Amino acid sequence: MQALNPEVQVTTLAERLAGSRLAEVVAAHDLVLDCSDNFATRHAVNRAAVAAKVPLVSGAAVRFAGQLAVFDARHEDSPCYHCLFPEEGEAGDGPCATFGVLAPLVGVIGSLQAVEALKLLIGLPSPLGQLTLYDALTAQFRHVRVPRDPACPVCGSQH
Ligand SMILES: [Zn+2]
Image (cartoon, rainbow, N blue to C red; front, side):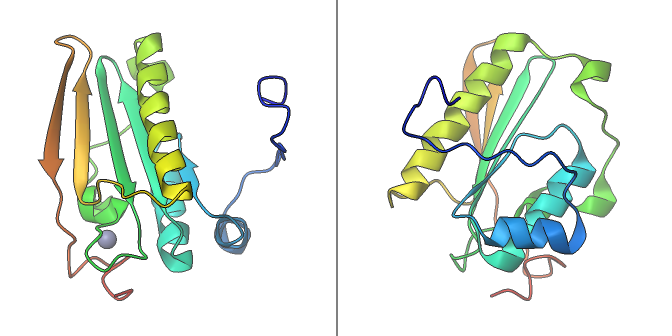
């Protein structure tokens, strides 16, 4: 990353973030990109982002399917990750090593996340309340409206 972008300062944290340490690190940043591969991490990152009112750009990819969503607790009508994928409703997940993922699909979703991250950082509007689905088999994008859940245990009391 440093070689590609000499003017960017890269700070690595060689630790597993959780609890108050996760909250502290998220609150100290302008934006979070979730590129993790499991629901436990996604929900922990979402809780920290909502609590700190830090925008979250979420990306996921498995097999031939990719997803992108932007959550921003600074906006009253923005859902959070939990509104979209309730923690208690998980059918089960597993790492990409279990299900497999078409390698270039990760690049597609990562590039879409980078676009949204840059837009947020320079103050351009992002598609809040929208889940973007990319099907690599048909090369088609679909968009699904995702309303905020007023009873969401994560963001419901934040507004
Ligand atoms: Zn929520």
